[in-house]
Length: 205
Image (cartoon, rainbow, N blue to C red):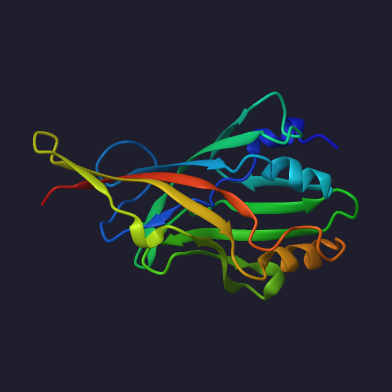
């Protein structure tokens, strides 16, 4: 099955980086931020081969790199507004959905949050009693260093992180397969999911 129209609303919120500076949503002005995420080559086709489509409910846009998502080297790029909270930066109001087209079973990742200090992406999973679960591991979190730019005239600071590498956290692939009713081993453990760049805008003190 081809993702086609559904890919237009695919994945998103997976890439929100937790930072010490506060930021609160939507566009490039003080107090706001944006995430850019690119899936690893072949993730969409791997999921599609298992009968799974990946999409997001909420505000985000996406585009496909390559001829179509079933190509082994295809990638999907997402543009996601993010909002800060006390624990980090999250995408409030959007859910990431893994949907099995064969049986209509789905897994929801609600309001994902990236924590660079811990090197994980966590999300609330309604199918697990609303438990907060680490769903992705940031393999290069310890090396992440922000580039800060201060605009004194606008009284704005731009904090940019690039190249955060994400893989499925241990056991998550098996959990996804179980909830979706897929055969064991349908999704490889530690699947390389993608990379993320995050830009946060905050007021200069």
